[in-house]
Image 1: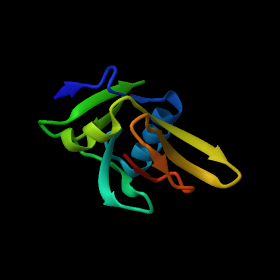
Image 2: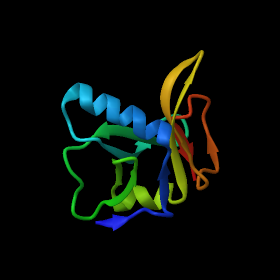
Image 3: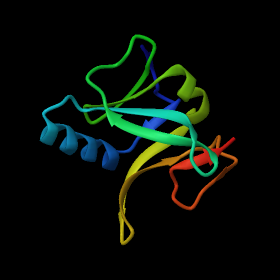
Image 4: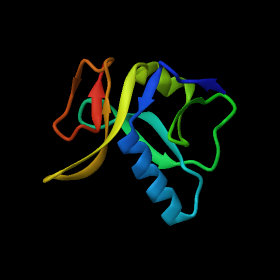
Length: 112
């Protein structure tokens, strides 16, 4: 496992939300971020709780909560920040990705 110290960032707001969801579901506080083909712009972000990091995952930690990213996805999100935002439109994890050339209005897909 590699550390993501400068590769990607999990904000304290996102870490707190992951911790709350994990506690409710009685799971470890580990958020997996992956990138898959699809969405309106070509690639889309996928989030889910993980039981443990995989051997080749990169791992970032904030306030005891870990963010894990597989090597293929890491190439597409290097330097990104994962935040949790609440607005009138709802609440969601949001990725600010410097590698994305464009994105869609929903904020869950991007192109490079």
